[in-house]
Length: 199
Image (cartoon, rainbow, N blue to C red; front, side, top):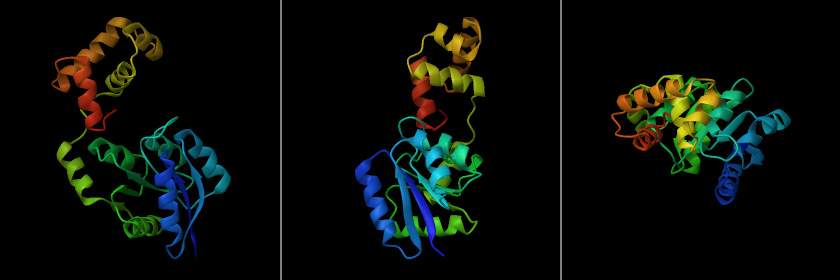
């Protein structure tokens, strides 16, 4: 039986190379490719792949958000150059079966696809060890939302409007996040949270 694969990566050359290498693997066929995260859900509905191989950083929607939306429709492997511990934890919570770096060989990716399709999990050992060492995010959902919006350049009043909070409450959430992340300012807190994959 052939495993039908959808590839999602915003780097056209990388996506094309991965598709070409996977098509050389026995029993694996790349049936669709997309270059944006916000195209993943529609492509999964249209092509009905067995496994979706997603990059994390894509325009429109990140791969983890896309994974959360398609996890009931197909198996998922995350293939990324961003090995942040928080990303692995979020991927596992979203039902992702495989998580490996873009420095993996085509054979390793094919092995991960086969294992995930068979109901197993395939995790990069170094990423798994880093995730365990890093622990869980200390941020609450609201602190994370406020930091994410601040990282996008939103003002306090815009964050307050977006989250339906008062400006004082937003300042409290940002202050609390800075304290938890041992940051001197918002920018440092945002960078720390991004580096750990908590945003």
